[in-house]
Amino acid sequence: KVSLKGRDLVTWLDYTAEEVHELLSLAQYLKENPYSKSLEGKTLGMIFEKSSTRTRVSFEAGMLQLGGHAIYLNSRDIQLGRGESIADTARVLSSYVDGIMIRTFETEKVTQLAEYASVPVINGLCDTYHPCQALADVLTILETKGTLKGVKVVYIGDGNNVAHSFMILCAMLGMEVVVSCPEGYEPKEDIIGKTVDLTVESGGSFTLTHDPNEAVKGADVVYTDVWASMGQEEEAFKRLQDFKGYQVNEELLSHASPNVTFLHCLPAHREEEVTAAVIDGPCSAVFQQAENRLHVQKAILQSLFI
Ligand code: CP
Ligand code: NVA
Image (cartoon, rainbow, N blue to C red):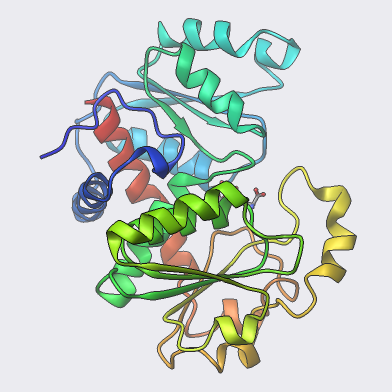
C-alpha cells in the first residue's frame, strides 16, 4: 500500500496512476462508510481568493465527517489580502493547522504556499488546475461506466483549469481523451505535451480537434465547463461569440454513444455551454459528480494527513 502522508496536491502530474487508484478505492470506501474519527483533532485551513459552493462545503463537511475541523479563510478577511506574503502566511498557518487548501489565481501561489508550508497543501482550483474536481470526475466515470481503461471521454469547450486536470488524470488512467475547443482556446501547450507522455505508459490516447461533431463520435462521456471562468468576466461577451458551435446539446450528443454520460463540474450556464435538456436530462450525472466531490475530498484529506 502506498503512503501519501505529508504530500502536497498541486497537480496530478506529481502523482502516479497507482497512487490515484488508491485514492479512488479509498473514496469508494468512504462513500459507503462516511463517518469516522480518522482525522480527530486535525484542522484544515481553507484560503479562498475566488467564490465556491462545492469545494468549500465538501471540504468543510468532509473534515467534520472524519472527526476533524475546517476553517474558512476568505483572503479579503485575512492579512494575505492586505499584502502579507504567501511565505509568511504558509509558515504561520503551518503552526496551527494540519493542512491548507487554497483556491486562487496563479499556480505559483499554490506552489509557493506548498514550498513554505510544512503541512500538506491542496490545490482547490487555480487558473491552470482543478485536481480535486478531476478525481471526482473520474470516480463518476468509474461508477457510471464500470471501468476506466479504454473509456472515450470528450471535453468540449474552453481549454481551462478543469480541462487540464481532467485530461491529465484521464490520460494517466488509460482513457481515450479527446478535447475539442475553438481556435485560440486550446489547453496549454506544455500540458498537452505531458498528457501525451502519460498516454504512452497508460495505453490511453489524446486527440485535440476543433470539430466538436467529430470529437463526440462514439463518446462514452461528454464533459463541458463554463466558457468564461472566474477572473475572465470581462471576456464573457466575446467568449459567447467565440464558442458558438461548441454548445453541448441533444443534436451534438446524437453522435455520441447511446449510453453517453454528460458531466459538468458546475456551476453551469444553461443554454450557453449546455442546454437544459441535456444537463437536466437522463444522460446527465452532474449531481452524482458534485456529490462525489465530498467522497474524494475525504480520501485526499485522510491520505495526506495520516
Ligand atoms: N466545481 C467546483 O469547484 O465548484 P465550486 O466553484 O462551487 O467550488
Ligand atoms: N473553470 C471554472 C471552474 C469553476 C469550478 C472556473 O475556473 O471558474
